[in-house]
Image 1 (cartoon, rainbow, N blue to C red):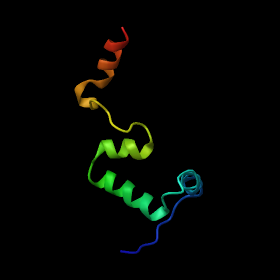
Image 2: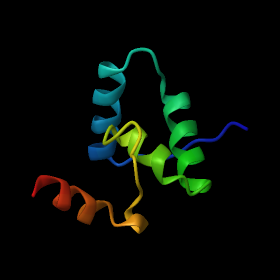
Image 3: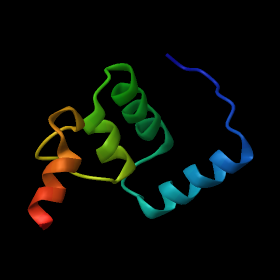
Length: 73
């Protein structure tokens, strides 16, 4: 499917900067990846897309923040 979307100027600038930093991808691939992650409710994919983590050992439902706190003590 082909479609046209509107991006506000500030979001467009962020997207352009991301694509410059990641020349191996393009706008179509980026949008597809973001939609897949969002629509399939895949939090790990969203975090990876955001560059937060590649693979978390636990999810938030397992008290991940408490686990980290206990490890530091």
